[in-house]
Length: 150
Image (cartoon, rainbow, N blue to C red):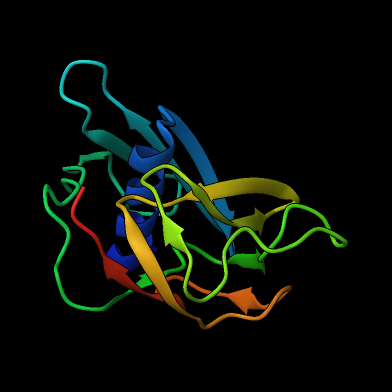
């Protein structure tokens, strides 16, 4: 079984965002191994599912300028959304907060690994859409934000 493009796109985007050069992903009997090349930063996908071959796929470019209208920040992959660094700690952000690029927004727990997810551009949090400990999937809207000029 060849993996669907949405899964590959989500995995490649996370690799690029986190600066990861190698990723192994297994689900429902499907195994994907992505390796970003040193020269061209293109990931190479190797699936061990029958009839799948190695492929070189381009990494999506990060938008050079964020959109000016309200937009959402979506979950990059399946996992558990946590709004704060600890159960008794205040949330990283709340509605009305101004967020700088690189500032932590939330924690995503994936396969017992906690990843602190940071803002990709400066913005103002309009609405927090996800509740603490919500299970999320790729594309689940987590925040409504208003991008700000740097």
